[in-house]
View 1 (cartoon, rainbow, N blue to C red):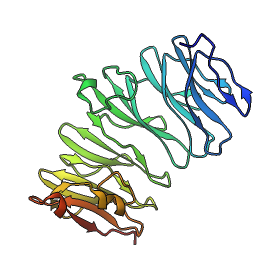
View 2 (view 1 turned 90 degrees about the vertical axis):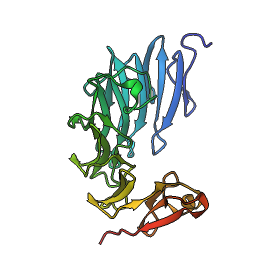
View 3 (view 1 turned 180 degrees about the vertical axis):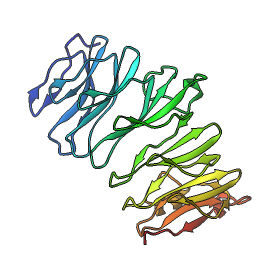
View 4 (view 1 turned 180 degrees about the horizontal axis):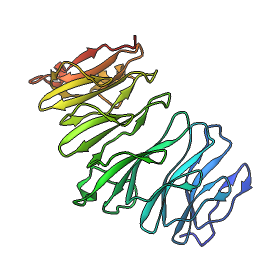
Length: 278
């Protein structure tokens, strides 16, 4: 075990301040700055180059904005987590999840939970039964402004590529919806991850009602297709996003992959849902 004040970062050949421990360093997008977590005793801080911020009981999720001009992280004190933007704290929550920075670097969004069992770190997510109390609820906070309360907020909270729009899945009661720019979309039993095209003008996701999946394009529900979302080798080769069974291809068309009832993995078929901005 390291002795107190026995850890530091060397930056461009210069030794930084000494701490008990330093971990998780990140460069700014232009490579001119560094951000890392440091600890002294039971206290933790995020260090920007050589300058520690406020000391907290715990910190997590530190990162630069895309333009490198802003820093964000979460810090905990007095039992509450706060989103910190350029050193300025937001209001306290029992948990904070899914922080995301706008692509244009003009702000951030995250899910803040109240009446939540305090679980250290990014462990279970806001939909975990381990984190719930009977009166638990979640808000999505965008540049300090709270959404209405939801029973759950799902992954992801996502900006459009131009930073002009924000979308996230949320649940009230048994109903899931996709919330876009604060407006709730159609009701479903389940919704899958939303996908923007490269322009940010087109938002597509899949919603499930009973055994049927419906493609939703800019809030308009399309024709139902019965089947199960599937992910195979061919999907990874075809889609822009290799980790999901649907997405936009390089031509701008939207694809998703369904395994029809009774089909084997070998007969799972591609369903091409061609959608383009006019």
